Image (cartoon, rainbow, N blue to C red; front, top):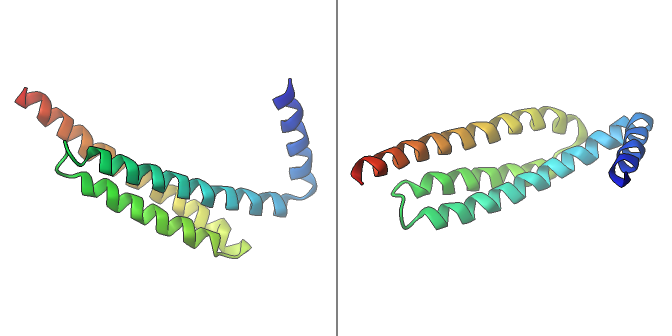
Length: 112
């Protein structure tokens, strides 16, 4: 219903002004990076008591925070390239931290 109408309006605006739409999406992506960085920081400190490698999550969070602020300061042409790179870095950071955490959970299971 309502979301369908909003998406149709957003689609028309995107077709009329693709440059502004892309710039807005880039800014939203930068804000999303900021939210993810804060979430990862909180998660790292929560895991600190039970995970000796909690600092890996904290490093990933700090790197994501740097990327978020760097994205906010870029011009239009740079944002197109940076968003692709940052999305890849985001996935890589999350994958590495999840990989390490999986091995730690497995090790805890063997100890029990």
